[in-house]
Length: 172
Image (cartoon, rainbow, N blue to C red; front, side, top):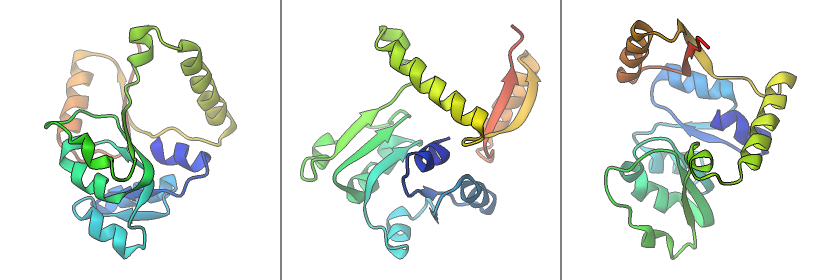
């Protein structure tokens, strides 16, 4: 969803993908350029984008930390939605006055913080979906939540070959 949401915000999107089917997927979602995630720095230079105002990280944060620090523009923002396997050296961002933030969808409800803004954001996304301005990224629906379907979803995820989201239907 990051690519279509960034497009709705008016941003130019450069995505990383290595497999041909992944590259096709992110292109279909609206990215303007695609870089192989195995050579991000070199790929960015090839397309003429050596630095970025915003970087959205969805993989092991520490594994990509050095390249994100290298590529973030002065006063840019890095956001990660995943854990880190190693401590991050935040002082690496000081020279560029860049910002690093974690984003976790459960923070606001867990700490009873500004739930109204989260509700407003979700309502805006709902309106975009209803209007056709934003489309979901569900590619596989395994049916109702069950032990077997959870096992199937897990098996698909551990292959690291999925594209889009895997869905399970609520029994409620």
